[in-house]
Image (tube, rainbow, N blue to C red; front, side, top):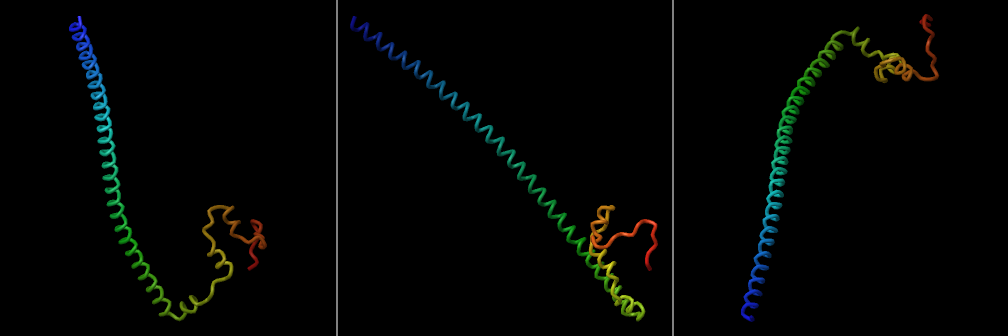
Amino acid sequence: MNALVAKLIACAIAGALLIGSVFYVRALRAELADTNHQLDDARQQIASRDQTIKGLRDDSKEKGKQQQQLDASTGRVAQKLATARQDIRKVINENPTVRSWADTPLPADVIRLSGNPAATGSDAFSAGVPAGEPLHASGDGTDD
């Protein structure tokens, strides 16, 4: 019986090793599947990141082109403004009547109103008028 018991014990050990190896292979396969899933997710994230980077680069190139257009347009406007100012100075300097008119200081009320932003409503207008100076009632004539 010793031989039979030894064979049974050997078969049991071999069976246990076989079952253990089956479970070990299953665990390895599950780990491999999980790793493959993580790899696919990482590939998708990399593709998404690369697409985002490409979009940002394209947007940056477009913004650069727009900036160049804006700079060119600003330069043209500045040149036109300089030309217009030169023309105005030329006209002012040519005619003594215009020169004396241009040298006359503006009235204080005009200077005060010019210093305020454009009035877009009655509230904006009344905000630009000092509190110590009352407004004329509507329909009243001017003092001048």
